[in-house]
Length: 468
Image 1: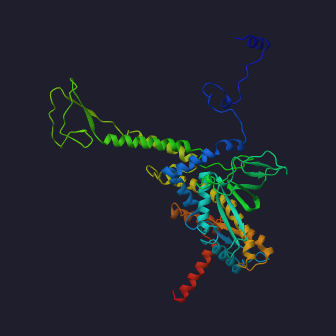
Image 2: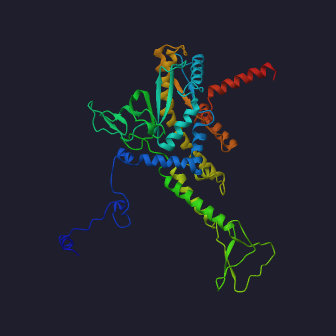
Image 3: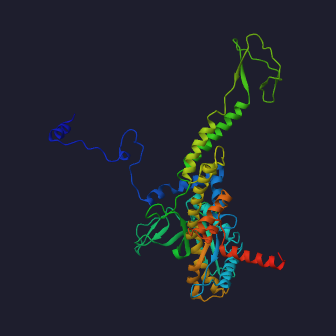
């Protein structure tokens, strides 16, 4: 006991127990970080490496390929996130159907391939897929709004990978009082006011032959899509970051186990003798290796003193499947989707467990759908509507553009019921009890109530025409 400890005991001081075990520093926690950095500081150090490794996983890891395909299928779906206009008359009682249909048709025409994208290669749903994949893989993506473009709507957009935003460009303070963090120029409140973009992709082979130049683009012309996880965060983090280490290690383990299993399938062995004399074998291949011919049910008599030692590795091991499944559970948690969905493994599931997993997944997909609507669809619509009116493609007063945008909704894809009979009965019961509406029930399936009612009316008219 030290002198200080004796003094404290004499004076009656009770030993103080630490409040949080997680803050303890010992030999068991020596490699656990104790440093606190801002979100931008951590990203500035590690974002480039994170992005490069996530792209490699996209190219070579089958589970990452499955995850990105799941995002595409469940968030975007076959038709993409579609515009539904709900503009009403001044009294708010009646939908302006003709105007709504004109706006929807005009936006659909703009969203065709060759119109909405500056390259002419993408349609509106393709653009949604690229934006979503880029956010998941790279953490962020840039959409440049190109006004007065050479098309009939005078408007198009350009999708730019995050590499165009110079990660190494940082200025503590500009003459106007702004600062630049990783290519993003911000005012005193941290609001982006401009983006400093490379004119060419820095990773393109032609960039090495020319000097890279930056261009300052106003924030009014850029949509920066990423998930903000920390206050003050200027750049996005790849969504696969929490799981990428396990994904890489699991890929290497499976490859090693596959090679070992292939070796184990090729039965072999070694001939040994006390004198070390070589065994002549039956024949020799083109590379000089001895060949022993073996037929089913046959035995070979070896020369005196020569023994055979079999080489028989036992792969794959009996615990291989259990181990891989355990690792994949952790990976699926890091990717925020269920194990059964990610691994395409329905072994051992029942109705209740698969239903719970599917519903959890769908809640996650809806969150991402709303992210896509808020960060991509709504800003693009807001910029598009003015030029659609200006170009004459929409016959609306210019002052109505804000009212139109406010009246528009976005219909993302929905899903079929897990158990159709039970789910339909539950929906009918909730509607009859006044706990939900037909609009909400149809929206969950990716359907629009006005479209459904219109089709029902057309069917009734057609049935009456044929006397049915």
